[in-house]
Length: 182
Image (tube, rainbow, N blue to C red; front, side, top):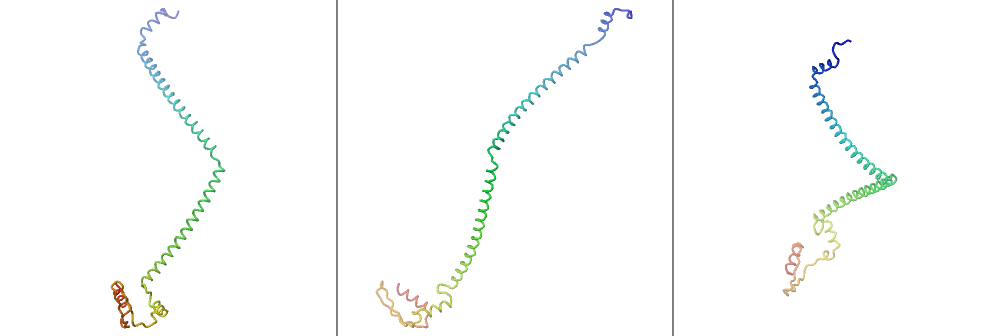
């Protein structure tokens, strides 16, 4: 035989001299770490599956909404509505342009009327010299040479006879007449 000793004894002596306790502890730690890693991996897988299910539900809801929107939206109706809105937009733009032109015309007319009013204010109530001369030529009361006026004041019950002298102005006589009547 090759061995002088009994193989069982040889195995027992080998086992007695072989220190397996630290290896057993290391294997236990490795098994525990593997168990923790497996639990963490299972937890992450469950979380990922939950998130995937949630995203799948969101996707299904959004697909349904998209399909409803697409089916409710007719491209022919859309095109006709765009044409209608464009027509309306151009009509409104034309009306705005016409109103702007009319506004400018009215502003010019207002400016002209303001200028005319200013001219009339400058001329006064009786007008300018040329207008007064034309009125005096056409007015029979002015054309006649009156040298007396009779003024009655019914409130006071008196009558005044005034001799009109051409050296006094018409304004003087009109003021005098009004004062006498009051």
